Length: 135
Image (cartoon, rainbow, N blue to C red):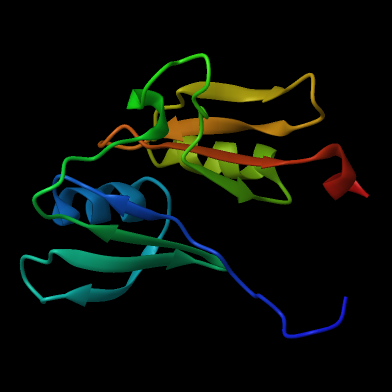
C-alpha cells in the first residue's frame, strides 16, 4: 500500500472515574499510564500497553458502552477489539491478575479465538486473533 502509514488507532471512553478506570486497566490488564491531566485526581488519561492505547475521560456525560445503545438487534457487542497474537497466554496472565472474563477464551464460528473482559463502566474489550493471524 502506498501513502502515509497509520500506525495506531485507539478508542476513547467516557468513564465515571478516571482513577477507577486507571486502576482497573493497569492492575488487571497490564496497561501503563502514559499521560494524565491533572496529576492527583485526573479527568483525562492516556493508557497504553505495547501498541494498544486507550484514552479515558470523565465529565458530565455518563458512560455509554455499545451494549447500552438503542435496539439490541443492531448493537455492536464490543467497544474495542484488541488484536493479540497469543490470546491463550494473555488469558492466563489476566486470570493471574484477577481479571473476570465476561466471555471465556474460545474459538468462535467466524474464525476468531479470544476472550472478552468488561471494564467497570461496562465497556466490552475483546482480545483475540483471527484464523489468518495464526499464519
